[in-house]
Length: 406
Image (cartoon, rainbow, N blue to C red; front, side, top):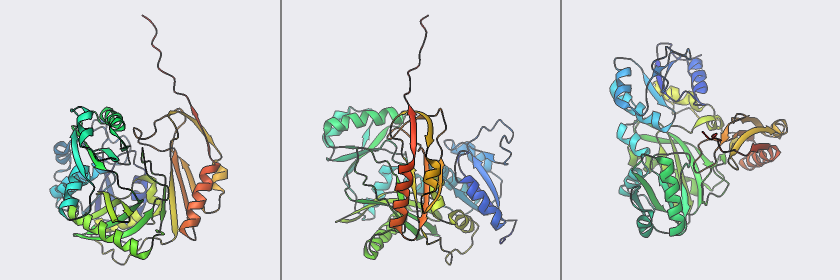
């Protein structure tokens, strides 16, 4: 074990976050005291027995009051809303992290596009449409094909492609029902090309790329459900260099300063196009593809020099098992067959029996995750697809609620 027990890190994360256990394990190995700040009920007295500090990600002033006077050496965050609160807390506590304005810009698709444009990065035509206006009015201003997006949701929730005004109006109404109280949505020209994810970390304003993920499944719409991530990328060194430089410019344009980031972009004949950058690491169980990511983040948070540290370079990947249709999850067969596929490390079914399944664009969950490691990225992808083909999911019809006549 390395490190000193006196070092303390405050982790902002939801109680249901998959990564909390991995961060806790990493902190224990390093001798770092990890405290969780999470959105649980403040009335109950430590219901989970984890000494967590109760906060509300949507109520920054009250959450900061709960943190005032406490002492930490570093801050980390998992999730977009937790990252915004973590940035505010870092200012209060006097520890380095991303500035609040940068974290908020990452959480606002219109503001991030504006900052990318100001920095000279290529951006599609875009505008912000009021949800209160008739969709036909916004449809007249839209470039086609276009993509409609909620300003603040992540993981492709509510992201819908429209090829004509009729599809635009349908997508507009679906997003308006999904986001409720939001005032605007984003409209931008569709960017063709291959899609990638980039994981990195910023140290006092200097970004460092840790990994590039290929997304081998085409993401062309009408919805944009992510499935397979594979690293290292199989793109040429020249293409990877263009993507690295573009992401670094985007990170600096947003003003990210100290901590992890997760970026999404597309590449076509015109070069690299940023989709978004998040002020937090890759989400949930997907982080298991990058070992030891949580340990690196904790070391960075307490001020260690991580320039000499590298993630495991073994080819790895994850499949986020998509929900094929709405209904009630009744179970799955074939998990042992899937685990027996060469290269598969684990198959985790996160859906619970009886759970109502909602696919994208409204849904926010997956059926589970498949993890693989192999000698090269192509073998990783083959293993993931073979394992997925071995799974047989049972999804029942959701019956409408019955109300007896009075």
